[in-house]
Length: 332
Image (cartoon, rainbow, N blue to C red; front, side, top):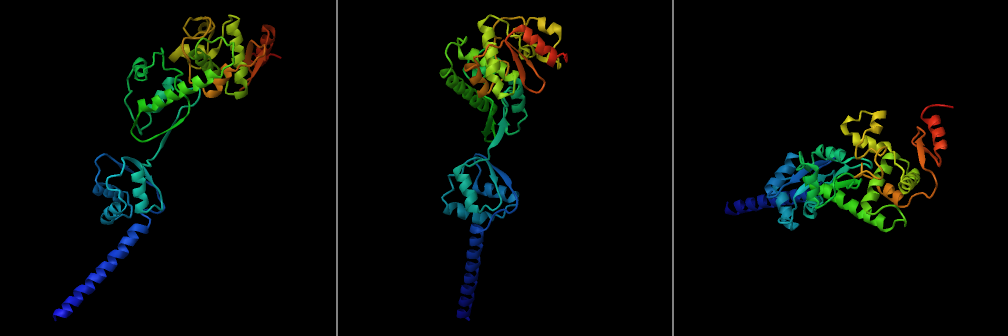
């Protein structure tokens, strides 16, 4: 009887051992999720138990016991990094743990298009739920102080681009990247500029680049328009550019410019003030910066929109009036 009991126990142990071996192999090699993508956020202080619970809550085929065993085998116990992770179909437990250890977190995206104002940038940031918001209600001066900048306005000082960031990145941190990027690009373009331009500082070039950015979306026209404005500056002519008037009107702009708007003095009304406005009016891209620092060498002093996104350029006021009659007043 005793031998039979021992034999039965051994048989049970062999069965259990075999079952555990198979179960372990399945846990190690089988995909933890199929035909779906899920997101999991690991926070500071999360234990392996809590992490496995989060995986189970997302309907992954994960057994907490084997998850901890495999984590021990993979030497991942104290190496898992916090953050939000994107887990895709076909990943196994070892592969998931490798993502956690390597810190390959999900990257979110935000885009600041060329020509946007700083208010538009802030609005886009405020609407993004993946950023940590610290700037709500903060005045522009305080924002610039965070970047140790003595510029009078944040306008135009952030480079338009697509930025990738981890969840819970602060709005200030994201803006700092865009600010540093603009400083880098501006210095690069300034260093390689054409000689003899009427700019005393890179900031003045940035101001004109923002105007060129708002005047046309046609890349090939930007050096030509830049050339027009630079010749106007050199000849002490008013810039007379509508985008600066619109910017100076602020919230009162409702889609059109009236005659009184062109005669009302604001720091940005270039139909009244001479020279450049005090700050940029938007974020210029690299093409606009390059254009004002390598302007066209023609003789045109005027331009008018054709209505198709391009412009007609004229060297004399007479030719300009003819172009305005044709394309703006619909005269033959």
